[in-house]
Length: 79
Image 1 (cartoon, rainbow, N blue to C red):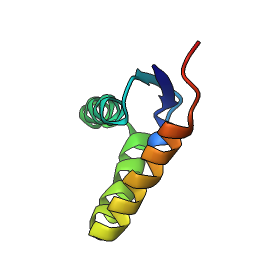
Image 2 (cartoon, one colour; image 1 turned 180 degrees about the vertical axis):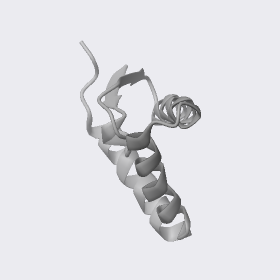
Image 3 (cartoon, one colour; image 1 turned 30 degrees about the horizontal axis):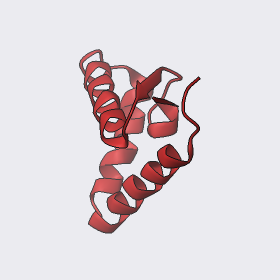
Image 4 (tube, one colour; image 1 turned 120 degrees about the vertical axis):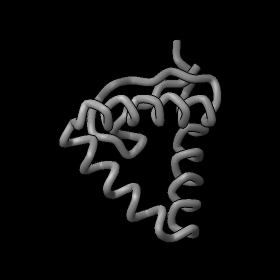
């Protein structure tokens, strides 16, 4: 297991996610984002706006995901 925060994944808070793979981590982050969207959390809505801008460029979003995957891979396993 490895740990990343919402903020490390482009979000707006320090909520920690724990996952064995980057794909699991991305799914946890996505679910949290949907919850915060439903709650209309202003800080998360702002972060989502930035992500939407990234998604306008397939190259930019691909680079973003690859960079986050590399960050995940470089993390030490939780103790």
